[in-house]
Amino acid sequence: MFDAQQFKSDFPVLQQVVHGDKPLVYLDTAASSQKPQVVIDALSRIDSTVYANVHRGAHWLSDQSTTLYEEARDCVTTFIGAESSKEIVFTQGTTAGINLVARCWSENNISAGDEIVLTQLEHHSNIVPWQQVAQRWGAVIRWANVTDDGQIDMEHYTSLLNEKTKIVAFTMCSNVLGSITPAAEIITAAHDADAIVMVDAAQAAPHQSIDVQQLDADFLAFSAHKMLGPSGIGILYGKQHLLASMPPFLGGGSMIDVVTQDDFKLADLPAKFEAGTPPISPVLAFPTAIDYLQNIGLESIGQHIESLVKLTHQQFSEIPQVQIHGPSPDQKSGIVNFTIAGVHPHDLTHALDNQGVAIRAGHHCAMPLHQRLGMPASARASFYLYNTAEDVQALTTAVNKAISLFC
Ligand SMILES: Cc1ncc(COP(=O)(O)O)c(C=O)c1O
Image 1 (cartoon, rainbow, N blue to C red):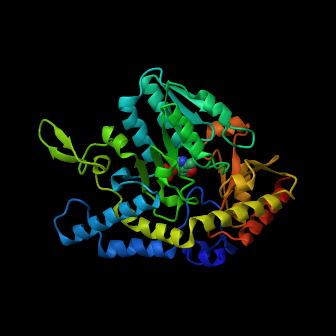
Image 2: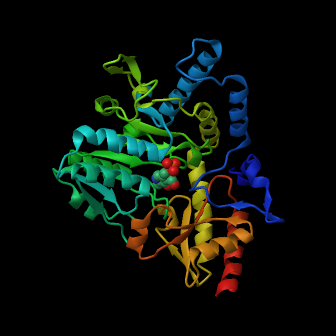
Image 3: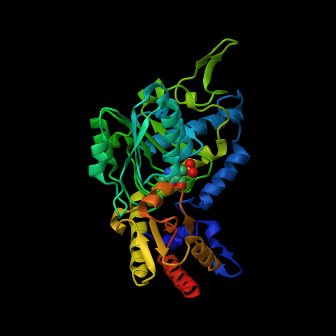
């Protein structure tokens, strides 16, 4: 049986009371998840036993660290079903991964008049890098519409694809509404038009298993900090032939084979894209987070958060002032996005915080989606494996109190 209360006890941060006596109810995982004790211990153990710079030292400690670094890469390779560990690049996060692709892939593949397809669901991390590409090369961005209930309008999306389309960049799961997008269908349609795809899996990787080969994703990026891992690292997956054909992102140590006064020769994949000292301890600790998730099972986690989302919908449906945005619970991941007539989401968030309930308010780094939905800001509660039905009840109680305060 899925015992969220038991899992919660693995997370020291969640044992706290805030504002004097309020048990912390953490409903902001979509921004960043918390770390279980095993991950905290792994970070501390790594720093006290094997920490040294990787791929450089000719000594025992550096060998240990380098071996574990490459084992972490192997772990991620298996986790997302990549063909080779050469296809896994450690980055700073999803944002860095998308920027890497936008800058380096577009260098040899985008020219004036080419089209880049985005969807109105995207996070700024999957918008701005493409706007920069468009500005630099004179390319055109085409936007796939989102329906009123927050799904990609697939008919409109496919109507945008043509011989000028070079890349489709889309999210597998909206960070605002939780909408799970039909990734396989989007990718097949893009490939049928001879375009490649950049998949933003920042919100999907924490709750659904991803097989990049089955999906036939060309590039896919996600962040460790949204799936129980340390902040400061992310994964960029890229098909080997695509990564091999791209120029490097940053120049410096580790990404070269030979440097002379006149020139340099690039290192092989994936080192070519990992210039400088990487976030060593976070990379080494990430497999512990992946193990923790896999021991519980991503499918069970997905089912649990869907049940919490359903419960929230049910309880909110009894509060007339609350308007929920986005698809029905079975079509979304662990996010409930809502507004309350006459109450600004920021004021609401402060009122909830006073009661120990941590949610997020604002545009959630997705201004175009808010513009599409005709609202400047929204409130977002997001759930993970450590949230319980009691947390949902605490949210509902806090929302009711806020309404009696403001309305
Ligand atoms: C859908 C989506 N894409 C991209 C990002 C950016 O991730 P990061 O800040 O880890 O680079 C986020 C973060 O919230 C996200 O939710």
